[in-house]
Amino acid sequence: MDQLNESLLGKIKEAITDYEEKKYPSLSASFREKLKLSKTTKNKELKLLLTLLLTVFSFYYLQSNKKLPFKPIKELPNGTHIMALEELNDQDLKYLEKILVVTENPEFNARICDILWIRKKDYTYARRAVYSYLECLKKNEEDLEITRIECLRRAMQISLKIKDKVQIDYIKIKIFDLFEKSRKTCFNPQTDYLPYNLIQIVTENKLADNWEELGDKLVKIAKGFPISPGCDAPRAYYDLAAKCYRYAKQVNKEKDAKLSIAHHFEQEAQCFITPNGSDGFNMAHRLQKAIKAYRNVGGQKEKVNQLIIELKEANKMTLNQLKSITGEIKINDILKNVEDNMKDKEGKDLIISFILSHKPFFYQEIKELVENINAKYPLQSLMGETTIVPEGNISVKSPGMINNSEERIKQDIIKQYNLQQKFVGFTIFRKGISIILNSNGTWKSAIKELVVDSIFVPKERVDIYIRALLAGINGDYLFFLHLIIPQLENSVRYVFGLNKFITTSVQQTGIQREKDLNQLLEDENAEKIFGKDLLWEMKSLLVEQSGPNMRNRLCHGLMTANEINSEYSLYLIWLTAFLLLSIKKTVNNRKGD
Image (cartoon, rainbow, N blue to C red):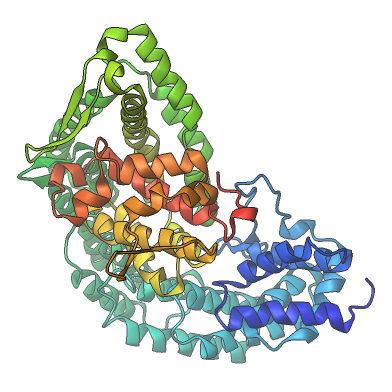
């Protein structure tokens, strides 16, 4: 493979064109699909080349490491190992140099040239990488925030490294132009962090001419946001403002900005007190943060003591809520394992660790557990049971084993799934989300990248998924559920369509109707796509009447505040993320079981 022939280059060009025509959400997704198709051929050279490109475009950007800014996912859900940047050998680099002739696509060329610059230290590739990153900005003015910020940040990092003053000045002007435009319209979940991320590039490279003025603008942005559960953007802007004031040597303004962070945590804690009950875990989390922030400022002993009293009450509430579902189960080892697996990670690595902290329960194991319980306590399974929903109606009557053993086992399996889901939600996922919230802000960009790269999400629904997951992780379960549940139904229908499965039903009158989630998950083809284990997770959580029945209760306006703020919402955050990462396009290549 010393020379790349026209046929090989044509296949690479075809994959890039498919991405440009929006057939796939990312270059990595396009190369992955072409690699799957190549496995039916005997062309080893093509497979090697596509594997190399899939590796290169599966790297995610790690802004804190300027020497090795691209990092691989250590392992995909199917166990496939992805090479690290430093593991690319000389022959790999030669292939990348030859591939550059195939296209003028700036996103493709930026990544290839950047990697060649990092590994070969050739200034020609450095300048070409900067040019390509800036071309990405021109071409994708409406692109997602994550892509635009990464292009600007990386272009600036390289320009500073090679001391290209012309490019440094140009990029600096571009950053401030975008900041001035975005700071007036950033008060929504889609663009709330755009000005912040732009000024992060300024502060980390000390590029501002008037630090005090910049700090004043950041404070003004922070004050423009409402105080609501999960809205942490104001604190990020106050923190960045404090840094600007420190550079400007404005001690009093720096102190005021830091006090504003503490005050915001304190006010947000009160948002978790509602007429229908309080969320002790989230109250305690915000109060702990407020105490730490006040202590960092100094001279706030009276305020800290007051909050410590409030924190003790919130912790008591959390323990009582935990006891209601855990009984005598020891959870310290479980929580420590989560912490060990997620500590010292950031960005995409952190989100992947959260997703892989749990996997769908094995249906066969749940069924065997139910059968063992029924065998051990036969009298309890002989009697019929009823499920009463909060509004007082009987939603399900489970027969006794004598009357209908098959139906009774099914209902018991659903209840066992729900018991396990509730426990995992309150322990593993609460702990995991807490770790995410306590990490740096790169997790938000990782969530956006996860959504963009997922075949499970139609391109026109990307922004909705991003807003939903950001809200859910930040504790706004009301917003999360109302956005995500209809989108999950649409995505299931979408994946059915990708696999050429029927998604409509025809009535006797000849009228066609789209199948809803209840019908889709009962369809025999659902198990072919999702596998039995994942399918039962979805059914028991979303559509079964003897379970939380989240889809139907939300869509019919029956879900109460307590249901919305339950552990099932935490479980659905994880389940959504797992679906995004694991679902593949075709049932023949499915690896997400």
